[in-house]
Amino acid sequence: KPFAPSKVSQYRKMKLEWRNNVSLGRSQIQGLGLYAKKDIEKHTMIIEYTGLIIRNHIADRNERIYEEHNRGIYMFRLDDNRVIDATLQGGLARYVNHSCDPNCVTDCVQIDRENKILIIANRKIQKGEELTYDYKFDVEDDQHKIPCLCGAANCRKWMN
Ligand SMILES: [Zn+2]
Image (cartoon, rainbow, N blue to C red):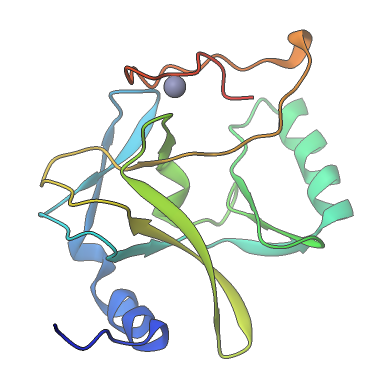
C-alpha cells in the first residue's frame, strides 16, 4: 500500500499543478463549467476555491450589490463567520457546477493556519468529464427555489 502524502504536501503539489487538471468550457449543465483536462484519480486534490475572504455582513452587502447589477454571484462559505467571494476576483473553481450525482466533494483543510476550500475527486474522473460537486444549499420556500439542471438520474430537481 503506497504511503499517503499529508494534506499539506498534497496541497503544495496541487498549487503547482492545478492548471494541468482543469479546463474552462461551455457547461453541459449551465453557463460555463470546469472540465477534467486529464484522467484524475479518486481522492486527488484538483483545485482550490479562491477569492476574497470577507465577513458575513460584507458578504450580505456584496450579494445585494451584485443582484442589483445582475451579476452572477460566486460565493463559498468558509466557516461560520467568513465567506469566500469569488465574484470579482475568484479563481476558476467558481465555475464548477452543482450536481445531485457529483464526481467531486469539497473539503476544508488548514494550511499554515488558514482554512482552504479544496475540490477533491470522489471517484476516478475521465479526461473530458465536467467537474461537479453538491452545493448543499439550504432548503428554501417555493418562491426562492432554484431549479436543478444537472441531468443526473437521481436529480432532486431543485438546488435548494
Ligand atoms: Zn440535480
